[in-house]
Length: 216
Image (cartoon, rainbow, N blue to C red):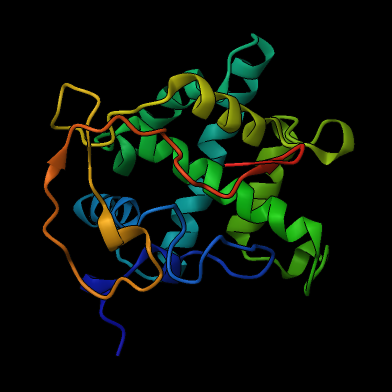
């Protein structure tokens, strides 16, 4: 029986038309996935695929005009997304880096699928509504460019190189993050009590984003 309390983000997101970096998580660390799930639960959303599909549809519909307008003004994704986040009820209290990584991870999963398309290929009428909205979002913000290069993923690469550190935890004023330990591993099987560490880490550390032969 499906246990909503223990639901993982990876089990709630659409499958067809996407190729995620892991079969067990959407972002690089399970802890970050859990923060998103906890935020959805706290906002009163049922943790079921139909509900999360509607959540993602709404997220991309809200984001499209805001990101497109910011892009037209020469802003990068990191500067734009906080404005999007303020318009999404469940995301308002999440750390900005987590929302950033969620957007990037979903777009990355679509880009990876496009490298080797599988069923339902480009029969958009067969797509999950959230994936159709993701495709529409990328079209609206011009996220294809020359040679199908995603400017969103390029922004993520440059941001990772330039920022070199993010405050993932929203209860700390310094650039410190929770040491996720095994939470980033596909072999993780339970909760781990992690000590706080003062290591400054790249914001999207070790995310498998490839652009122009560069892999993080």
